[in-house]
Image 1: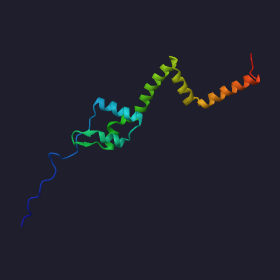
Image 2: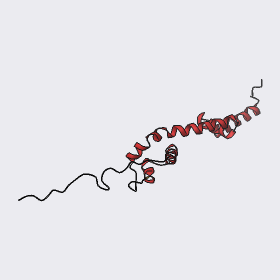
Image 3: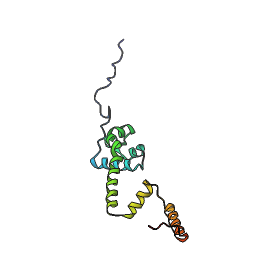
Image 4: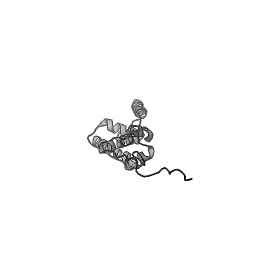
Amino acid sequence: MRSPAKKKRGGRRVGAGRPADFVPTKATRELIKMHLALRGYTHAELCETLINPATGLPISTDTFARVFAREIKTAKIEIDGIAGTGFVRQLRRGNMTAFIWHSKTQWGWSDKMIEQERRLAVLEERLGLKNEQ
């Protein structure tokens, strides 16, 4: 007795195989770059917002890492460059708010230190200790 015909496996079938690659638009790349630079969301959270049209499902974190590898590596550098350029422009224009922010964050100055220096200057003046040259 012969065995029944084996069912054919493999071959081209609708829906079989790997889904089509996710291809982001330029606008999507820019948006992801901004979110990566500002570090407000995890990669997994960003994946939930990116739907692969071939599957109708969010992309995986592996796909995210592969597709957005350049953005992951360069986003913070690019945004820091843009912010730094604008900041230096403000310093050169004499923007005192920019100067104060820079002095506090980069030189360790604080409002408390400035107030202490003012009080010391007043005290020195009252005591006649101020060096006049």
